[in-house]
Amino acid sequence: MPDDTPSDRLVLDAMLGKLATYLRMCGYDTAYALDRDAEADDDLLAIAEREDRLVITRDSDLAARAAESVLLTEREVDDQLRELADAGFQLSLASEPGYCGVCNGPVEEVNPVEPTPEYAPSASDERVWRCTDCGQHFWKGSHWASIKSTLEDL
Image (cartoon, rainbow, N blue to C red; front, side, top):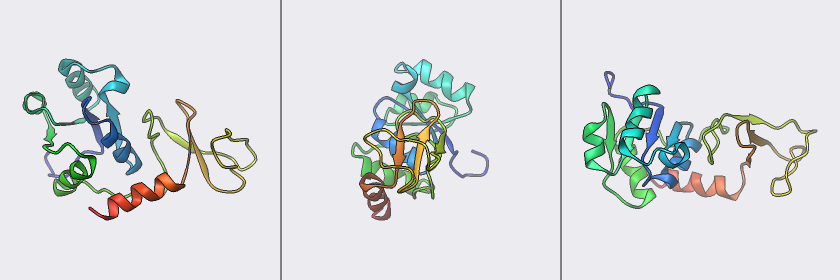
């Protein structure tokens, strides 16, 4: 990229599903191959070009074919996060969710008077967000704390 800073619009190959969730929680607009029915390299590259996304992959052939890419070498998500941090990615939790960790859709805060699903706390008791695409609800619970701890240890 011209200014040597990572893009905030990413597309990850099929091997990086867990990493996609972390990046979404860090505020990156992160498309994931299997969410987009783009397991084939040509399909993934078409998404990257059409949507101006940086390709992140463990596949050296795919990385070489992409206009812009980051090639990861590690298998474990913690190690992949370290590689991205070394490449200049800002990896800390956003102050509040912006993208759904499940589908990458936009997230909005739930009004405290609205009901929440059984698996989520009441929005009158704590802040809860909902994906406008898939309806998944999020809050800063134990998963949030676990991700935060992982990122702080990088």
